[in-house]
Amino acid sequence: MLTAIIVEDFNDALELLKRDIETNHKDIKIIGTAKSVVEAAKELRKNQPDILFLDIMLGDGTGFDVLEIFPELKSKIIFVTASDEFAIKAFKFAAIDYVLKPYAEEELAHAITRAKQQIQPSQERLDILKHTLSSPEQKPDKISLHTLDKIIIVGLDDIVRCESDSNNTMFHLQDGKKVFVTKTLKYFSDMLKPHGFVRVHQSHLINIGYISAFIKTDGGYLMLKNGENVPVSVRKKAEVIDILDQMHK
Image (cartoon, rainbow, N blue to C red; front, side, top):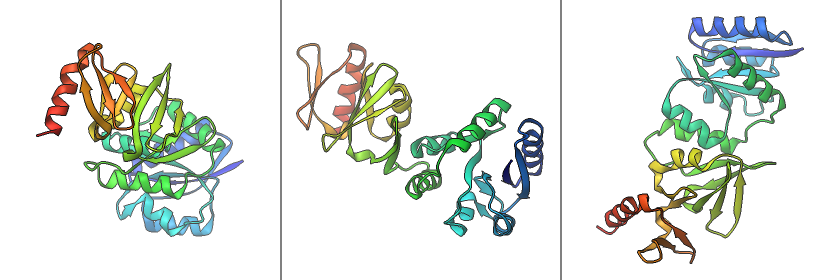
């Protein structure tokens, strides 16, 4: 039997989550609930559960405040957050799982399964999440990349380009290293486009800071500062030329 504590400041949401777990996940026993950072701290001082369901926004602070009070917390964390585009972006940048309110039962079941299998997110990934949540309009400094066997944290400014590899993505970094990630190029294009990246081709996403020149011959391609050439699709040419014009103004 696994133990769980739920930290959620909205009573209806707390009761719904509690009822869903008690009804559909008989192997989990809820040993406490809390509606604030202070209450959560009291519960966690009594018992550290196997799984902590942690709302991000609480009346007297945030879920991160709870984690800072218990830096040695061994519980597996399932973050719970409202349907907010900035919150979703933050979780994706940190490569940390979350459950969206209002959630479907299937989504909750997936999160519980993942939590049982997972080790804790590193402090650095939690810091990325916290920073991106607190400054939604700013460009994040770092992104967490899920490879087949580990999670790698890289600086956005160290990414030269991303290349599609079927339903996967190869990241090409400034130091010549490559990182293979099992998510589509579209997934990263949607995340990175507001932060200085441009999709110049079905298979290529480029950090505009590494563009050296646009060569109009041979169908049109970009020369990058590391010496690589990347093709530009016909329908992307006007957008690429416009971006380069803006850069040189």
